[in-house]
Image (tube, rainbow, N blue to C red):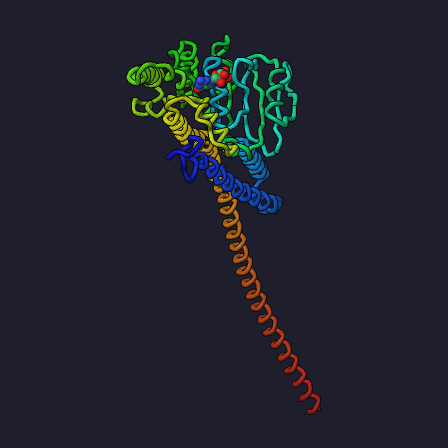
Amino acid sequence: SLEAGGQLMSPKSPLKVFGEAKKKINDIFTDIEKYITDAKSFVSSIVNLEYELTSTDDEEFIDELCNRVCGIQEMLNRDRMKVAFFGRTSNGKSTVINAMLKRRILPTGMGHTTNCFLQVEGGTSDEGTMYEPIPDSNEEQVRSIESINQLASALSEVKLNESSLLRIVWPQDKCNLLRDDVVLVDSPGIDVSPDLDKWITKHCLDADVFVLVANAESTLMQTEKNFFHKVSNMLSKPNIFILQNRWDASARGTPSEETIKLVKQQHLDRAKAFLVNELGVVSKAEAEKRIFFVSAEEALIARVHQEAGTPTPTSALSEGHQGRLFEFATFERRFEECISQSAVQTKFAQHAVNGKDMVVKLHKLIGIVRESAVSCYESKQQQRIDAASQLDYVEKQLELLTSDVRAKIDEVVLDIEKKVASAFTDEIRR
Ligand code: GDP
């Protein structure tokens, strides 16, 4: 079912899966961190004992694990879902992004002169910020942006080369997508003499989803296709969506429904052949779920009104808009499912493998320390038993010795007594 703004009603966005997975894996790494710091203080407390249960090598190894965990935690905090939009200038990339964000954040139309990559991401501040790279340096010029108009005028002053990336951090509370950790990247038009390899390596290797915004009024251009050929050469099976945009315009003025159907089928066949046969990124059945006939302009108008709580004037939308709004919402749903699933896989699966590896290694180390403690205890115990039996022997010897001496003394005493007694009897006789 469809809400007023043309969005699918649903209790929970698939994007939440990413947030939940991120929270879960973060909690796991907090536990791992605790396990490692406990192990570290334990090992430090016994490393200087005389028993040689552990060594400074072990201490260093645990330090290394600490650093690794911190590194992963930092990466986790930065991990977001990334979608990159491509297509020829004026196909409607910025309009699609705005429609997905439900507000006109990026400037659109011919007046838009910024010909570099624009990245929109969420921030916790209630003000926007623009980070503009300063050419030939690693620094950025930071500008705070209070309003969308101010952003448009700031962007119109930007003169950057086409492979630079300008970041716009926007209050995330105002857009669900941003709040759910989606980063959107708008590219300069593919027709703008692009250095495709550089674009891909600089901005696309970590993209979870690519959206080709095509113009439904014409066929896919070779430059558009070339780009995706390169992408699928560099990334194994990239997730690609094709939006046949401006479908309102193609539908407008077309004589019959029959013709519209025919045109649609032609686009669909070509787009499918591109994804399935040329790129080999999806199966025939899956391809159906990757191609959409939309009007980003209508979707944007409907969403802006929906956000403002005002009814969308039907005059602003063309005939048949319901179907196109529905198609846009279906695209968003599939996109959300795809991006969260892909991001969880590509971003967290490796962290999980690393986390497991660390726990296994630490467990092994602690196991070795434990074993040497046990054998040390046992050998001390043996020493104690040996010492005790030696003591026993000495005691017995001593006893034997003293009993000998005592017997001798008794003898001597007896002898003396005898002698004294006989001397005494002699005396009496005399
Ligand atoms: P970009 O250069 O690819 O980012 O294209 P823009 O988003 O700036 O759009 C170029 C122009 O096409 C703007 O004037 C938009 O209002 C208009 N436009 C974008 N999408 C549609 C659409 O679906 N239908 C119609 N009729 N116009 C659109």
